[in-house]
Length: 139
Image (cartoon, rainbow, N blue to C red; front, side):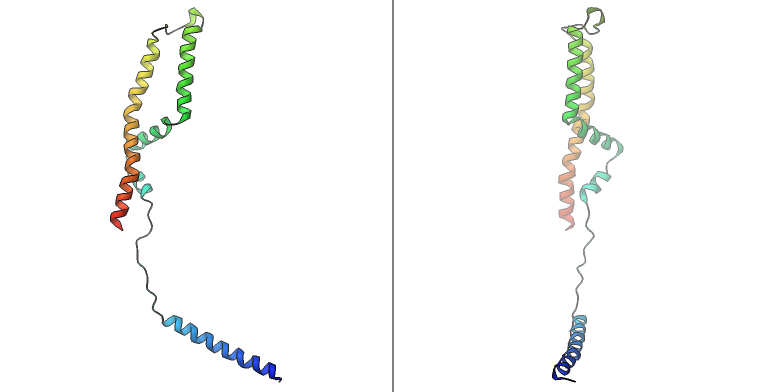
């Protein structure tokens, strides 16, 4: 056996012993477990606590506050008022300039949606502040 082979053989056995010593030392080091509750999504928990009526209010609030809804109402109004102003006289169904039926339907929509939107906005505001306060209290 050459000097080189003898040196590699000695170092190799020595390395295995060192490796075992290091592993034994690591096993003896105390490992402290950090106990904490699992991470929670407070927004999801709060949303799951809504009643059916609150969910309806949130659904309406999220949909009515969109540009698409605005375009639907705008288009409906332009078509209604345009037809009853410029359409054939015999086919007009809501006389200008009062547009009583259009005003009545518009007011019904507003009266129905207004409280639902307000409830939905209160719930949306509560999602952020209530969830944040619950998380702060639990930490």
